[in-house]
Length: 204
Length: 146
Image (cartoon, rainbow over all chains, first blue to last red; front, side, top):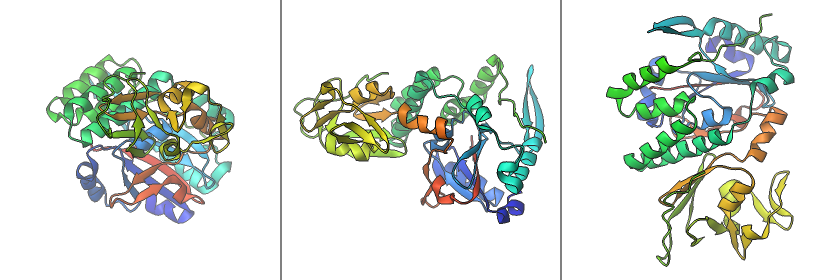
């Protein structure tokens, strides 16, 4: 898809939310033979900037640096994965259809959101969410210094303050891979809302 | 907000202190000893959070926050007191102070729709910013190995 669109003054910036750095993310970029811009975002700075709470999520930014669509799941295929009593649904086809339309038509695209719709979708972070983010950054700092005890303390603090943020949980769990699946499943089974927010793409 | 175990020692010479804010980690070689608050040199403020102490207050771009007397003392600036004043979260441990977003700065995004910039290294360690792509349409998309 990128090769098809890149000549239309369009860029994909992919950011691996990986505290493990290039060692964790690099082989996946290699396998994808990525030709777009490939970032290794150890501190999850992109998720912080755009209020992403899981992966993959994306935003569209126009030529002037203005947000056309704020945070939403950014899949490229439709899948339904049944897990226990629930399912994970990805809505990639509608997302890619919308993206292509916007790259071609810009602000005239029906997928470019109005100011009212932008304001409805983007809510300022709560005090707890802001503290959770500060705590996550402190955890990353201690992790990089090799202090697992302090890193763990502040990862858990971030998770408690913002339980809806899967990045805070899944990143920490990745360091104990033998338990990660079980922890993910326990949290998933308790979920009352969909694992990924419903994609609200307006159809032409 | 919590500031447990701030790790400040009295009379122990230079105290290693690191402030995390945004994409940056700033090391401070001189802070004022205080069991609860983080006092930094006012001159260090711009490299910490891009604010600057001026007669009308602490200012950054077109934002100015008036400073009450308890936030300034000679060359010292009370960074944690300032954070509470502007409703900025912080968490600290062992001489590392992590500050969250400043709502007044963040508010520009909600009002203007201008995407906040980021500064994140690529695979070779070169820092890439969203603003590098001005003039193009951009999809910024995350993923993870986990």
